[in-house]
Image (cartoon, rainbow, N blue to C red; front, side, top):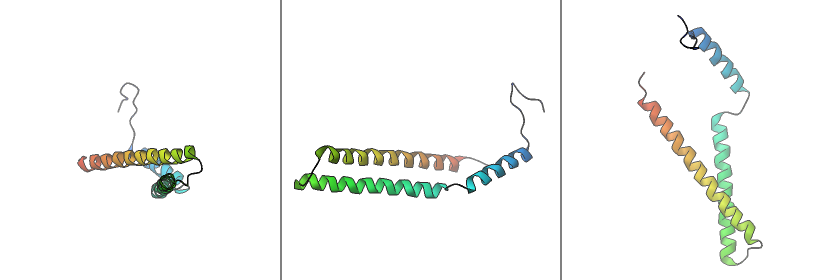
Length: 101
């Protein structure tokens, strides 16, 4: 087959070679599940620190109001980011479900 405007054809063998090289490269690093679990744990830690900061503010035991406000803001932003990541992952999953083979 001829190439169309700079696009070359790819054989099944080429795709399998690329897949095996990607699999080999990924086996040395952390997998997606571990990365996701780590990110969720970080968000949870930030949420716990935020709750402690809010409790300190409510009871008047806060030492540094600025640091407490930062902890609360970090927790809020990290939760919003995690929700957006979840939404994107769900949309991708739904899109894969709609894909016809």
